[in-house]
Length: 344
Image (tube, rainbow, N blue to C red; front, side, top):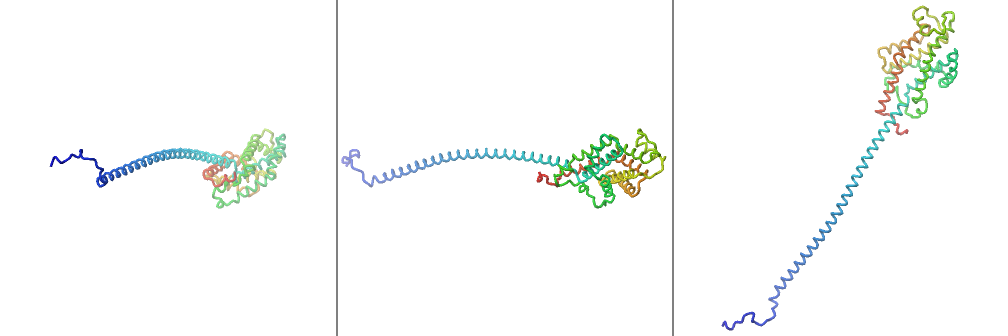
């Protein structure tokens, strides 16, 4: 009956049975296990985040350091390239200066011939008492550099006369620059050319050649033409040119002077032709001097060589040859064929 039912709160307390408690225990254990796993996972995640943050900071520092090193290396490379460019410019400038100081083969030949000219005419000054106060010292100096002036110039003229044009068609080969820089300290440097040019100008300013011609003419025939010290060589040549005097044989000294100048003119007109200078007249003039050098000279030949020397100077053949030679050197600087760096 209802009166016999006792409410559960009034029922006496009995310990729960294992069957009743087991599910609760399992639930609690599972909860604790999940909580531990979550806590462990959270701790692991926090540790990983901390490690990642530290690693990121380290890598950021490494990247920054590498970036700075790269920028520094780039600046050093740029500086090195600039220094290399400056060095190349200096080497090019040095090569240009060095090659311009070295004479070509033809220029050295010209130096030798002009030394011969100076030695010969100062010797004639000594012989005829012209500019006696300086002639002896001048002759001694130039003859020490050119002991056989007549023979050397005649040999150069003969070589120019016999030269086969087909053998030398390359102007660059004719103006070949010496491969050894030892020429800088010898006769192959430009100082030698400057020295002989100074000597030639001094000879011209003192009118040595005119005085020598006059002295030789007076010694040859003092009774034929009476020259006083005021008569110039130009007047002498004018008299002969106007036909007032028939052709006559020259003295040995005068003949040597004529063939000396014929060889000189043959040499320079050969060079002018080889370099393509004065193309309208070069070949004609060369043939003229070749033909005239094969016969015994007369007074007419003496007039011709003096005219030829005047024309050579008026046309500036020697200057043109110098400019042509320097032009080839400048081209060789742009396209160098000799390795100067290895010799420096």
